[in-house]
Image (cartoon, rainbow, N blue to C red; front, side, top):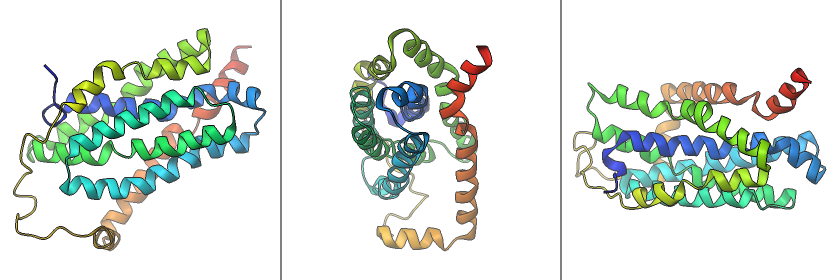
Length: 245
Protein backbone atom coordinates (compact mmCIF):
# COMPACT_ATOMS: atom_id res chain seq x y z
CA UNK A 1 0.00 0.00 0.00
CA UNK A 2 1.29 3.45 -0.83
CA UNK A 3 2.55 5.47 2.11
CA UNK A 4 0.84 8.88 2.00
CA UNK A 5 2.85 12.03 2.26
CA UNK A 6 0.48 13.52 4.80
CA UNK A 7 1.09 10.81 7.41
CA UNK A 8 4.75 9.86 6.98
CA UNK A 9 7.44 12.48 7.73
CA UNK A 10 10.10 9.92 6.77
CA UNK A 11 8.77 9.78 3.23
CA UNK A 12 8.68 13.58 3.13
CA UNK A 13 12.33 13.55 4.18
CA UNK A 14 13.20 11.17 1.35
CA UNK A 15 11.45 13.36 -1.22
CA UNK A 16 13.35 16.35 0.16
CA UNK A 17 16.63 14.41 -0.13
CA UNK A 18 15.92 13.88 -3.83
CA UNK A 19 15.18 17.61 -3.98
CA UNK A 20 18.67 18.45 -2.73
CA UNK A 21 20.30 15.78 -4.86
CA UNK A 22 18.79 16.87 -8.17
CA UNK A 23 19.73 20.52 -7.75
CA UNK A 24 23.33 19.67 -6.77
CA UNK A 25 24.58 16.82 -8.95
CA UNK A 26 25.24 19.24 -11.78
CA UNK A 27 28.34 20.24 -9.77
CA UNK A 28 29.83 16.82 -10.48
CA UNK A 29 29.33 17.30 -14.22
CA UNK A 30 30.64 20.87 -14.52
CA UNK A 31 34.22 19.96 -15.55
CA UNK A 32 32.95 17.63 -18.28
CA UNK A 33 30.35 20.15 -19.47
CA UNK A 34 32.95 22.91 -19.50
CA UNK A 35 35.22 20.86 -21.74
CA UNK A 36 32.44 19.63 -24.01
CA UNK A 37 30.68 22.97 -24.53
CA UNK A 38 33.76 25.21 -24.20
CA UNK A 39 32.25 27.36 -21.47
CA UNK A 40 33.90 29.79 -19.08
CA UNK A 41 33.77 29.48 -15.32
CA UNK A 42 31.60 32.61 -15.19
CA UNK A 43 28.97 31.08 -17.45
CA UNK A 44 29.04 27.85 -15.48
CA UNK A 45 28.56 29.78 -12.25
CA UNK A 46 25.56 31.63 -13.67
CA UNK A 47 23.98 28.42 -14.94
CA UNK A 48 24.68 26.38 -11.81
CA UNK A 49 23.77 29.06 -9.29
CA UNK A 50 21.81 32.05 -10.58
CA UNK A 51 19.66 30.24 -13.15
CA UNK A 52 18.36 27.89 -10.47
CA UNK A 53 18.31 30.11 -7.39
CA UNK A 54 16.42 33.06 -8.88
CA UNK A 55 13.48 30.98 -10.07
CA UNK A 56 13.55 28.79 -6.96
CA UNK A 57 13.30 31.82 -4.67
CA UNK A 58 10.69 33.68 -6.70
CA UNK A 59 8.44 30.69 -7.36
CA UNK A 60 8.64 29.48 -3.76
CA UNK A 61 6.59 32.44 -2.52
CA UNK A 62 3.39 31.77 -4.50
CA UNK A 63 3.79 28.03 -3.87
CA UNK A 64 3.87 28.66 -0.12
CA UNK A 65 0.77 30.86 -0.41
CA UNK A 66 -0.99 28.14 -2.40
CA UNK A 67 -0.04 25.55 0.23
CA UNK A 68 -1.98 27.58 2.81
CA UNK A 69 -5.29 26.71 1.16
CA UNK A 70 -4.63 24.10 -1.55
CA UNK A 71 -3.88 20.38 -1.50
CA UNK A 72 -0.32 20.28 -0.24
CA UNK A 73 0.48 16.67 -1.09
CA UNK A 74 -0.60 17.19 -4.69
CA UNK A 75 1.62 20.28 -4.90
CA UNK A 76 4.58 18.17 -3.78
CA UNK A 77 3.70 15.30 -6.13
CA UNK A 78 3.34 17.54 -9.19
CA UNK A 79 6.52 19.44 -8.32
CA UNK A 80 8.42 16.20 -7.77
CA UNK A 81 7.39 14.83 -11.15
CA UNK A 82 8.28 18.11 -12.88
CA UNK A 83 11.72 18.61 -11.35
CA UNK A 84 12.55 14.93 -11.96
CA UNK A 85 11.71 15.46 -15.63
CA UNK A 86 14.00 18.50 -15.70
CA UNK A 87 16.77 16.43 -14.10
CA UNK A 88 16.47 13.82 -16.83
CA UNK A 89 16.42 16.48 -19.55
CA UNK A 90 19.59 18.03 -18.13
CA UNK A 91 21.41 14.92 -19.27
CA UNK A 92 20.22 15.53 -22.84
CA UNK A 93 21.25 19.17 -23.32
CA UNK A 94 23.60 20.10 -26.14
CA UNK A 95 23.96 23.85 -25.55
CA UNK A 96 24.36 26.23 -22.65
CA UNK A 97 20.94 27.77 -23.36
CA UNK A 98 19.25 24.40 -23.02
CA UNK A 99 21.17 23.80 -19.80
CA UNK A 100 20.09 27.19 -18.45
CA UNK A 101 16.46 26.50 -19.39
CA UNK A 102 16.52 23.17 -17.56
CA UNK A 103 17.91 24.91 -14.46
CA UNK A 104 15.26 27.63 -14.65
CA UNK A 105 12.48 25.08 -14.79
CA UNK A 106 14.08 22.81 -12.19
CA UNK A 107 14.06 25.74 -9.79
CA UNK A 108 10.33 26.19 -10.36
CA UNK A 109 9.63 22.51 -9.74
CA UNK A 110 11.82 22.16 -6.66
CA UNK A 111 10.15 25.17 -5.05
CA UNK A 112 7.08 22.92 -4.62
CA UNK A 113 8.72 20.74 -1.98
CA UNK A 114 9.71 22.56 1.20
CA UNK A 115 6.82 25.01 1.83
CA UNK A 116 4.02 22.39 1.64
CA UNK A 117 6.15 19.91 3.60
CA UNK A 118 6.65 22.37 6.44
CA UNK A 119 2.90 23.05 6.48
CA UNK A 120 2.09 19.33 6.63
CA UNK A 121 4.54 18.71 9.48
CA UNK A 122 3.15 21.66 11.41
CA UNK A 123 -0.34 20.13 11.18
CA UNK A 124 0.68 16.57 12.00
CA UNK A 125 2.75 17.27 15.10
CA UNK A 126 1.97 19.26 18.20
CA UNK A 127 4.34 21.54 20.06
CA UNK A 128 5.82 18.66 22.06
CA UNK A 129 7.03 16.74 18.99
CA UNK A 130 7.12 19.28 16.16
CA UNK A 131 10.78 20.18 16.68
CA UNK A 132 11.80 16.52 16.42
CA UNK A 133 9.77 16.08 13.24
CA UNK A 134 11.37 19.18 11.72
CA UNK A 135 14.80 17.86 12.74
CA UNK A 136 14.08 14.59 10.93
CA UNK A 137 12.98 16.51 7.84
CA UNK A 138 16.14 18.59 8.09
CA UNK A 139 18.32 15.50 7.70
CA UNK A 140 17.33 15.37 4.02
CA UNK A 141 20.32 17.56 3.12
CA UNK A 142 22.74 15.20 4.88
CA UNK A 143 21.14 12.11 3.34
CA UNK A 144 21.46 13.60 -0.13
CA UNK A 145 25.14 14.43 0.24
CA UNK A 146 26.26 11.51 2.40
CA UNK A 147 24.39 8.72 0.59
CA UNK A 148 23.22 9.77 -2.88
CA UNK A 149 26.04 12.13 -3.89
CA UNK A 150 28.80 9.45 -3.71
CA UNK A 151 26.62 7.13 -5.79
CA UNK A 152 26.17 9.87 -8.40
CA UNK A 153 29.94 10.39 -8.44
CA UNK A 154 30.49 6.68 -9.01
CA UNK A 155 28.06 6.70 -11.95
CA UNK A 156 29.65 9.73 -13.59
CA UNK A 157 33.11 8.24 -13.14
CA UNK A 158 32.18 4.99 -14.83
CA UNK A 159 29.48 5.92 -17.32
CA UNK A 160 29.62 9.67 -17.97
CA UNK A 161 27.72 12.72 -16.85
CA UNK A 162 24.72 12.25 -19.12
CA UNK A 163 23.99 8.78 -17.77
CA UNK A 164 24.24 10.15 -14.23
CA UNK A 165 21.21 12.38 -14.73
CA UNK A 166 19.17 9.52 -16.19
CA UNK A 167 20.08 7.18 -13.34
CA UNK A 168 19.25 9.89 -10.79
CA UNK A 169 15.58 9.89 -11.77
CA UNK A 170 15.09 6.11 -11.79
CA UNK A 171 13.56 6.41 -8.32
CA UNK A 172 10.46 7.99 -9.92
CA UNK A 173 9.24 4.53 -10.88
CA UNK A 174 8.45 3.76 -7.23
CA UNK A 175 8.35 7.05 -5.35
CA UNK A 176 6.09 9.01 -7.68
CA UNK A 177 3.14 6.56 -7.45
CA UNK A 178 3.41 6.81 -3.65
CA UNK A 179 3.38 10.59 -3.65
CA UNK A 180 0.62 10.86 -6.25
CA UNK A 181 -1.61 8.59 -4.16
CA UNK A 182 -1.40 10.94 -1.20
CA UNK A 183 -4.33 13.14 -0.32
CA UNK A 184 -5.11 15.61 2.42
CA UNK A 185 -6.65 12.91 4.59
CA UNK A 186 -6.34 14.91 7.78
CA UNK A 187 -7.90 18.32 8.37
CA UNK A 188 -5.66 21.28 8.99
CA UNK A 189 -5.01 22.05 12.62
CA UNK A 190 -7.93 24.23 13.66
CA UNK A 191 -5.91 26.00 16.30
CA UNK A 192 -3.56 27.57 13.78
CA UNK A 193 -6.12 29.84 12.17
CA UNK A 194 -9.83 30.30 12.90
CA UNK A 195 -12.01 28.81 10.23
CA UNK A 196 -13.94 32.04 9.82
CA UNK A 197 -10.80 34.16 9.35
CA UNK A 198 -10.33 35.32 5.75
CA UNK A 199 -7.36 34.04 3.79
CA UNK A 200 -4.82 36.75 3.12
CA UNK A 201 -3.99 37.57 -0.47
CA UNK A 202 -0.44 37.02 -1.69
CA UNK A 203 0.48 40.77 -1.55
CA UNK A 204 -1.01 41.04 1.95
CA UNK A 205 0.94 37.97 3.07
CA UNK A 206 4.17 39.47 1.75
CA UNK A 207 3.51 42.75 3.55
CA UNK A 208 2.83 40.89 6.79
CA UNK A 209 6.07 38.92 6.55
CA UNK A 210 8.35 41.75 5.46
CA UNK A 211 6.94 43.89 8.27
CA UNK A 212 8.32 41.47 10.85
CA UNK A 213 11.92 42.11 11.93
CA UNK A 214 12.15 38.54 13.27
CA UNK A 215 11.19 37.17 9.86
CA UNK A 216 13.76 39.37 8.11
CA UNK A 217 16.55 38.13 10.37
CA UNK A 218 15.45 34.52 9.92
CA UNK A 219 15.56 35.08 6.15
CA UNK A 220 19.11 36.45 6.33
CA UNK A 221 20.27 33.62 8.58
CA UNK A 222 18.68 30.96 6.38
CA UNK A 223 20.29 32.44 3.28
CA UNK A 224 23.74 32.36 4.89
CA UNK A 225 23.22 28.87 6.24
CA UNK A 226 22.13 27.57 2.84
CA UNK A 227 25.04 29.24 1.07
CA UNK A 228 27.99 28.08 3.14
CA UNK A 229 27.75 24.23 2.86
CA UNK A 230 27.45 24.28 -0.92
CA UNK A 231 30.10 26.89 -1.68
CA UNK A 232 32.94 24.44 -2.53
CA UNK A 233 30.72 22.11 -4.59
CA UNK A 234 31.36 23.40 -8.15
CA UNK A 235 35.13 23.34 -7.72
CA UNK A 236 35.54 20.31 -5.50
CA UNK A 237 35.98 17.72 -8.23
CA UNK A 238 38.84 19.38 -10.17
CA UNK A 239 40.45 20.45 -6.87
CA UNK A 240 40.46 16.90 -5.54
CA UNK A 241 41.76 15.63 -8.86
CA UNK A 242 44.71 18.01 -8.55
CA UNK A 243 45.40 16.86 -4.99
CA UNK A 244 45.60 13.21 -6.02
CA UNK A 245 47.56 13.72 -9.24
